[in-house]
Image 1 (cartoon, rainbow, N blue to C red):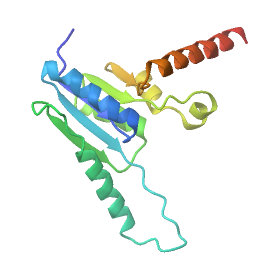
Image 2: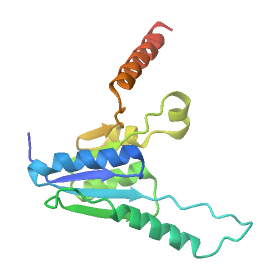
Image 3: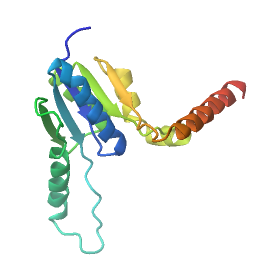
Length: 166
């Protein structure tokens, strides 16, 4: 396996992204690779009605930037870089940054949407997996209890069987 020098970890600050960050750090550690954490921000919608001040967009940027910089590896020998983009569509921006930083791997969380939710919202992770030039690891937050895992596996198997039989 080729050496890993740089891992891109896109984040939306969800629980899945938190788990993906920890996994990216674990993967980076044996290689001495750096972890490049990226957030593509979407501008908040500011209401034309009410007390929307001109400082709200700046406060939004500051809060997101602070959240991004809170992503630190537990291991002090892992280099973590932070990048915030305040415009653009997440999937194409993730791919653009991956190419620009010469990422050897992308590690990103998923929300686990399926069916209509995925159709309507699209899936950033799916778009990245389909178009990335490097390996992509997608991560779902693990279920906390073994009983919950068994129930989830049974439910998923039943759903798959229903799709193939229906």
